[in-house]
Length: 113
Image (cartoon, rainbow, N blue to C red):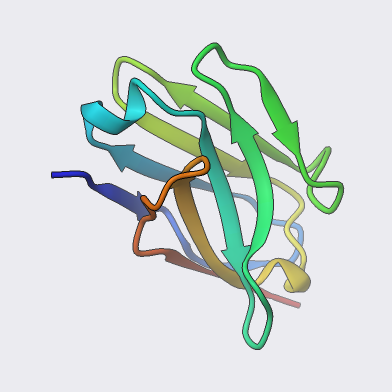
C-alpha cells in the first residue's frame, strides 16, 4: 500500500523555522523524484520544490534561499527545512511523488506576525 505521511507542521512566529518530514513507502520512494507543494486558504496548490533520487534539487522562486528540500533514501523520507518563515507561508503543506497520483494528507503550517 502506497503511503505518504507528512509531519512537522505547527504554529511559528514570523522569522522562525520548521522542518517538515514526509515518510514514504519504499515502493514509491525508490522510484520517484519527490516534491513539496502547499495550498493556502482560497488559493490553488502551489509547487515548492523537488529532489531527485540522486539529490538534485529545484525550487520555486517564492521559496528559493529560504527553504531546503532533502531526502534520506535509507529512511524513505523527504524533508523540507523552512527558514525565515513569513505569514504568507501559512498553508497546508503536501508531499508528492513527482508527477504521480500519490499525495500525503498534508500538514498545517501557520506563521504568526
